[in-house]
Image 1 (cartoon, one colour):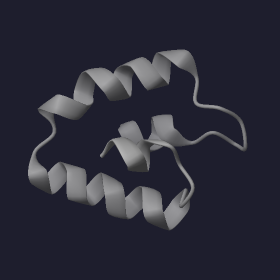
Image 2 (image 1 turned 90 degrees about the vertical axis):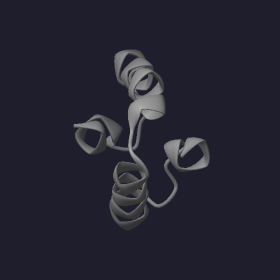
Image 3 (image 1 turned 90 degrees about the horizontal axis):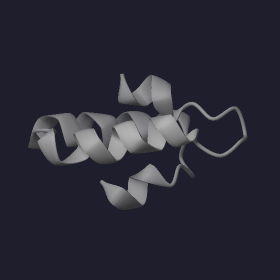
Length: 53
């Protein structure tokens, strides 16, 4: 779900998606963080969430 919320289409992340990310980030397992990081690096290599993972 967070990967889909990360899709910005060249725009900033929507506020509700940023809030969802911040709410979910602490609950992600190590494996989930690794998966999300790899997926973001592949499809959105400049995404600001990469710094937060």
